[in-house]
Image 1 (cartoon, helix red, strand yellow):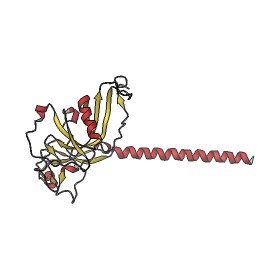
Image 2 (cartoon, helix red, strand yellow):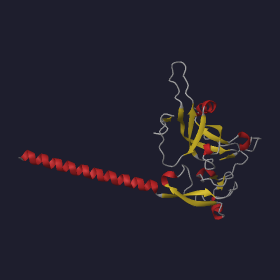
Image 3 (tube, helix red, strand yellow):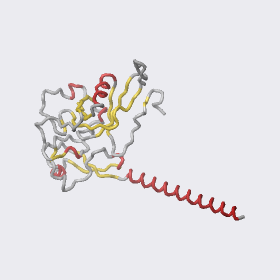
Image 4 (tube, helix red, strand yellow):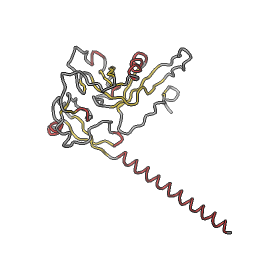
Length: 248
């Protein structure tokens, strides 16, 4: 009898612990869902912002306005607050209307006459993307993007695995350092072809030495498309979308 009572008591305790664990997990999931949906302040350019304009003056003149987005939809690197530390920073280059403002667009000195600023240890590589393939005007210098590559199937040589036809994730997170001739630290124009002449817009990325030749190869062999990253996004780099699974 004593053993039966102990066994029943243990079972009841285990059931209670299980219920408490489920409730705590559910509450945590609810809190995470609410947090990701909470609106966050971001800033967008309502009009063109000339290079050298302070952040404070841009807002006071209505060139830059506040808006809100769900927290998980805020582009990585976005300006979300104006403080005493950043309000007097200057636009490093002209900001086009309709851009989500990146914090990196403002600094201490517009460097209009200097060469493009490439992050230490990285390589600047440019590619031309159509407006849809670069998310319209919303990708700007300072944006973080994911780059997709659509390729036809190919038989590999030397015993390597064949390339599967479909759309692959080429890079899950790369920094845009220039759009056309507008950069975080833009160079003087040197007869560069216009976007219309090129059939798209020139997008310059900061890549690691390992990524750079991969992009060069992809430019020769596939079709590239960019997506603007949100602040809270997880990308399955192993995912390959083909005709067989596009509707799944």
